[in-house]
Length: 73
Image (cartoon, rainbow, N blue to C red; front, side, top):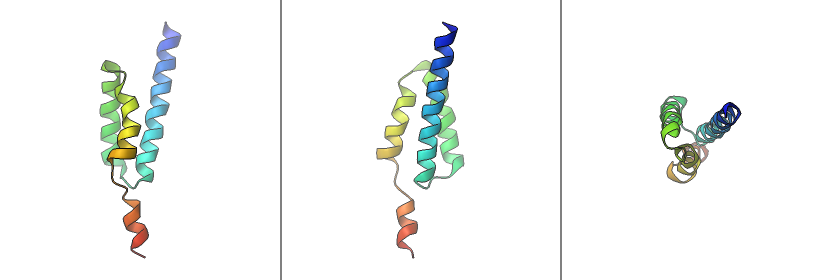
């Protein structure tokens, strides 16, 4: 049982860190994404589906801020 708990914790942590890196690549600063990361990580203990929604939110819900920087040149 303890093994599965740590396996779940490690999996969710890596999934969230990957999503956090994706949000940084889209041009969002670490303060905003860090707060959202902590919120969803804690919410994930109550609703295990919540951390898996985060990558979809980042990919489809957040505006890509790097496009604005590319077109300014």
